[in-house]
Image (tube, rainbow over all chains, first blue to last red; front, side, top):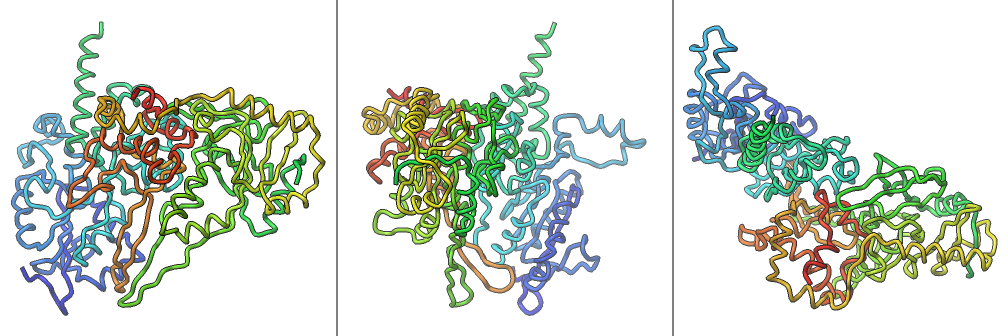
Length: 272
Length: 357
């Protein structure tokens, strides 16, 4: 598909599905680099930044948000059709996002409590990542995504190379940054060892445990980590909750949360 | 130059600073001993001690005024000899530019015998062989090493087993032994560079009693190792166990998070990453710390060679205690115990080695 626009400049589109807009805002947050981006690409479709929506096709589409409505199902196919490269950005687009917590419950039940006329709400039973519906060229993790990684992905796609986005644990970044381990030194529960790097080990740098915003790392051993989290005093319901956040239905975190939930159910059954 | 006694570290710190050194020593920060810039001995963590166990580190009061009453901190000299990341080159069009790497003059005050042993291992890695690393050489030459003999080994220490401590015997510019009653240091120079500075400091000759007290510190420390390793035939023992079921067992506990390799003062593995700038046509290559515990480390043709946690743990342990001898003529392990303390789930390398028997 020959999408290239004016003067041979690649055309960029930014799309929103079920999301909070934080990830696409990260592009606008690239204050120092924004002019370089704008010089290298034509920002053809980016409603968050401009209501002037240029027609497709596009060389690179950044897609934020999960698929949560019947309408989304149609629209993502359109986005795929008009995009030469499609990159999903953020936990909603790559893993279903925090709204995928609906998968663990009955969404109609929620709707009946929240809305006066729930029949007006057209929504799907589950919130799913973009890759569950159309082929995706690259998934950039995070809740929200990291600014430097976004620039790296855009630069890599413009240069036609593989983005440098390492899938190893947060611990590697933590040690490179010179943070002491909050688990070892303070006994603070931390998901860093099972979570993919990318944030620059932000929370541990401020003596907080990792919340797992970037989803499971390349070879997570949540079972082993959970034993230690229990040693540090985490209860079974707490263990369920730490995995059921932004990446709750990403397979390794789903299994880790489910295993803890099964245990919680057993504990409840055993209770006198 | 004979050993002398100094009463305060401030003249030493001042002299090093006047010679252009940034003095880096132990400080207490975020409840951990860190190696950080200091201005005076009052910055040192007086009266603090650490409790170290597998997967556990706690700092607390020792009830004395000693400056160095703790064992190895998570920081070794590695960060100063081999920074976590560095730019190898940049290119713009046809022009390639190799930046002069910064090699700051740093005086490390309070590094331990195990750390000196680690530096000797690193020297073999980076300066031995046919391709010495000039950046490492410059950083290494700009280090001034003030060792402190360990008085209080940690619960995960095993330098005695590895023959690297607790007393510093070589590789330092100055070695100090901290003594109480009255508080003082026995100072020894490891060469002319150290002696030259020592002569300038206010000092008294060390008496036989001082020297005896200093020897006693090391003798007591040697008796209080938290861990031990049977090193007899270790190279062959580990090499002959590639099919041991122990690798699967440890993999069930291992997070493959890479913390052990990051805190290890001899683990030197890196990866290179290429970058292209967005706008101005600049490209380049950076080098950063990597680990044999990441999948990318052995990725060939799109898939890792060592895909399982068992394969990766086996690689690490086998390299440290066996193939390192083949490659560099020494053990890769110097017995500091950092990998045990800083493993989030407390995997103990000394226990794993014992189970391989």
